[in-house]
Amino acid sequence: MNKDELIKKWLDNNLNSQEQKAFEQLPDYKEIIRLGNAMASFKAPEFNADKSFEALNPKLNTKSHNNWYRPLLRIAAVLALGFSIYYYSGSLDTNINTDIAQLTTVELPDASEVELNANSSITYNNRKWEENREVHLNGEAFFKVAKGKKFDVITNDGIVSVLGTQFNVKQRNDYFEVTCFEGLVSVKYNGSETKLKPGNTVKLIDGKHLIAKENIFASAPTWLEGESSFTEIPLKHVISELENHYNLTIDSDEVDTSRLFTGSFTHKNLDLALKSITIPLNLGYNKSGSSIVLRRE
Image 1 (tube, rainbow, N blue to C red):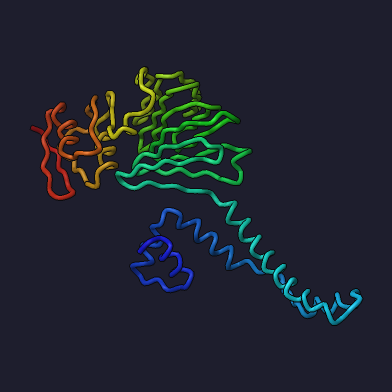
Image 2: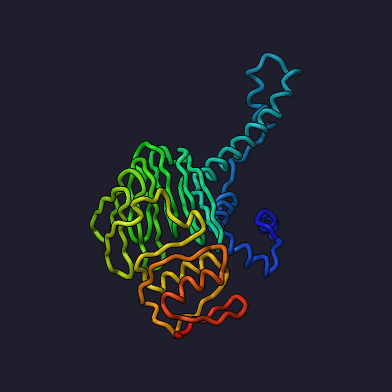
């Protein structure tokens, strides 16, 4: 059942237990509930068209041609209620999510562009955008920012601030990385600030702070072309990224996931991707359906 059908059945209080679980898994579930509660608690002032007409009638010159006021008064009441609901819903945040192996392009209100990587999400407020260009990111995204006021990307690990530039931000569990491709990028984290020029990357991985010059000749991250690349990254983060692009579960209990990996894997061929990771580290793997078990050779 699609999203619209779930919401319609929810409004009708007609969800079964399975549909209720699916409804609660919707990316904007909380926003829908908030709007529903607001609509339920919103009560327009009592409005009696007949009494209002009677109060107004003595001020009018005629009686026989005033019936057209009655429907206008009712329309005014409906419009007032509709405007209140529209204003409330328009003030809610916009939340965009991607699933496993899904990429999407988002155009922000100022024509800035966001390429959202797999298993990621961004949130922004459309109504407040002109005064506050602010995006909350969970996952990974490549930004092409239109020139204007300060533009902030807020993550759990740090804040990235620019005016107009192109950069990539990745924030997943214990992994925070920002790469500048054009312009100048300011990165604030752990009480410090680092400014990046094109080709510079700042990383905060498992609590360790690293700064390296990478991708100097690149104009965009490799994941936009269907390939994830790494330079001396702990294997556990490489495995996590592999799971973001393939619908599978990887068991790595038998291997040392703190080993550093340098290389890349494709998003279009699972066997080739697994070999690209395991062969350089002298590892093997067993595959059963959507489960992979890594082993030492």
